Amino acid sequence: MPGRRRIPRDPREKADRLIGNILLAIAFSAVSILLLLTLFIFKEGLPIFSKIGLKGFLLGLKWAPGKGVFGILPMIAGSVYVTGGALIMGVPLGLACALFLSEIAPLRLSRVMKPAIELLAAIPSVVYGFIGLVVLVPLIRSVLGGPGFSVLASSVVLAIMILPTIISISYDAMKAVPVSFREGSLALGASKWQTMIGVLLPAARSGIVAGVILGMGRAVGETMAVIMVAGNATTVPLTPLDPVRTLTSNIALEMGYAAGDHRTALFATGVVLFIIIMILNVLATRITRSRIRASFPKPHRVSSETASATGSAEGGERR
Amino acid sequence: MTSAPWEDGSDGREERGGRERDRQGRSHGSRRGGGLPRGGDSLAERSAIGLLWAAAISAVAVLGFIVVYVLWHGLPQLTPEFLLQSPSAMGREGGILPTIIGTVAVTAVGLIIAIPLGVGTAIYLTEYTRSEAVTAIIRFGAECLAGIPSIIFGLFGFLFFVIYLKMGWSLLSGGLTLAAMVLPTIIRTTEEAIKAVPLSHREVSLSLGATRWQTVTRAVLPTAMPGIITGVMLSIGRAVGETAAVIFTAGSSLRLPTSIFSPVRTMSVHFYILAREGISMPRAYGTAAVLVLLILAINFAAYWAMNRFVARRT
Image 1 (tube, rainbow over the protein chains, first blue to last red):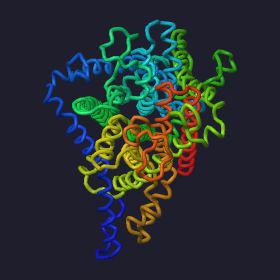
Image 2 (cartoon, helix red, strand yellow):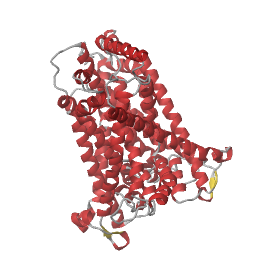
Image 3 (cartoon, helix red, strand yellow):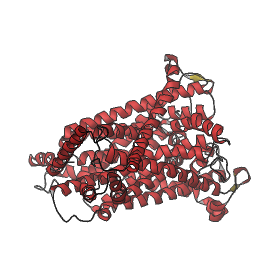
Image 4 (cartoon, helix red, strand yellow):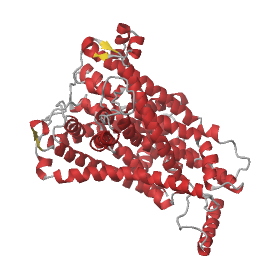
């Protein structure tokens, strides 16, 4: 650490310590927001559990706020289906893009493509929802039948929205794999493809898993895009062409006019969502933390080349 | 990343090999791989690699499609009246001026609050931190906050700012909620920018008798500035495009805001309402075009700042 103790009783030193304490207070802002957020949402949502029971709320098949019936199983199922669908489409596509950018693309091309893909993350979610509404929903309706507003439409929109997350985190993980791994594989006579599938993907596995989990978190938490294409029926969808309502859209759709128990039930929906997201977050952080140690055993030969590879691994870690 | 001389040598050898193959006409095409050499792949493997090309191109094509589609339908709507008039009949007629002002105001309030907090946190984490445990707690908080979906921020902002602190649906509530939302982005990007400042900058400053704070403000922050600006630009982009967190905290009033306690409607919220309630498709396209153009401009500015940062570092 720079700035070891110097001569004491310097007035500037005192001021510096004061600034340090102010900065410490500021640094706790993120933690305090997280605590406040948890506190307020739980305080507002938990009463519904004592009223209709945890089981009745989580496993109830019927959502009829007018009659005081609050069961969110259809929404939990909806979130699971829609997220699952998004992962089925988004993960292979995302991994393919990451492999392409890290191993195949000429440098000049990847320099243009990477920012372009990151720009996908910057497009507002309402715009995705809107494009889904005016392009995808009519397309599904005319080609596959059904109302168009469906699990399928939501999954496709979400698959595109989680692409940037999956691509950039898997890309970093692939770039963090030491060059010597590739060279070893190629030297043993493996082809480029065999090296990518047999050596690179396994070595980058935990980083890829972390990316997928974060993408999953994004898909579960997405609201506006899903509302516009999902159809929002409060029944458990039976086919991919059925309309669906997710946990997030349940909150956003009814928050505007809800009161009393209805409002509490919506906050309780938020509590369920919050818990799911926190589990995913902690999982992803754990996996990212243990990544380098787990994936790359200590190299036997310490050369400048392995040192540079470790450097880039840390670079990937920091993101 | 610094590449070792050994690595460079190998790259050079490869390149020569590639050119040689080209001359002998055995290699197809002249495109060259980034990390791995070509040659020896079977037809199946080459087509698999072709699929990777297709995947990457389709991802970029989706982006192109979205941007072109929105601008194609939206740009014809962009008249001076559309940009400079207030809406009437719920947005069916007139322009979007109050929503543009609302967007700018809410984003500005959010960033005025988030920048000092985020940059302060990053300075603490990189330059002042003493105990590992405190740092770990702060990092954990920031990481968790980064993963929380915007609808949860909306719920929290509604409960805490709008109701508990009695700010009502207002610019201030919306701004504070956005500040909470973009705080992790600002912390992370600032931290990375500060970490990238060479240690020698600090050593020279401290050896000249500067205090730690003087070192931070005069030696470290100026060098890290382009990186910090990139983070701020990305946060602005996120705040401008946000809907779920803002709709429950800033309200959806179409009047021009007069104070920090006035309710406002942002462009994203306006666009969402127009499109979802089917009020006016042409007006929705127009709003979307303004939104997308703004987001593109902000992101290009962010990349520009980042490239300057990288250029200055090397």
